[in-house]
Length: 115
Image (cartoon, rainbow, N blue to C red; front, side, top):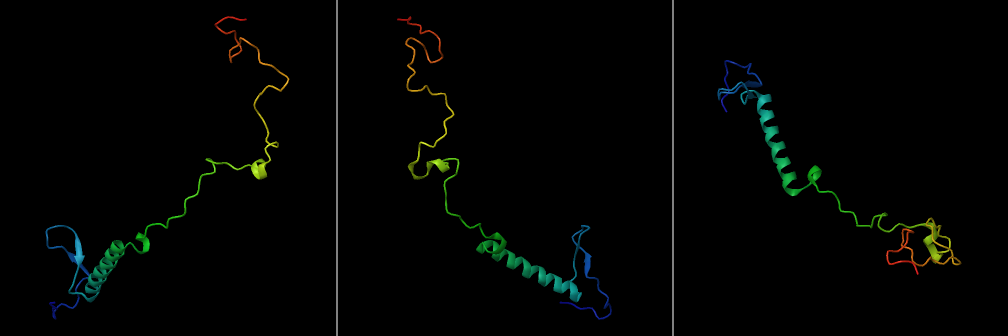
């Protein structure tokens, strides 16, 4: 590593010699050299973490599967086999009502004719 004795005031960053307007670390400055080493160490550590899938790159923990509440809802009246407490909202006919003969489900006359 060349150190120049006549110019002790080396900048931390210098222009790239590749013809671009970018700046690069200057290895002739002790702070620039430290930044080069730190950058390399950080890069190697991140590559290890990515490869080993550790730290922030660790996949999330798998939780045990449980059925959705929408698939099998549980209601308080379903407990202990008590089905007589179930509220009814449909319009089912009572036991003393008899269905009319010759009517379609929509309530109109059947096309085959009334008896």
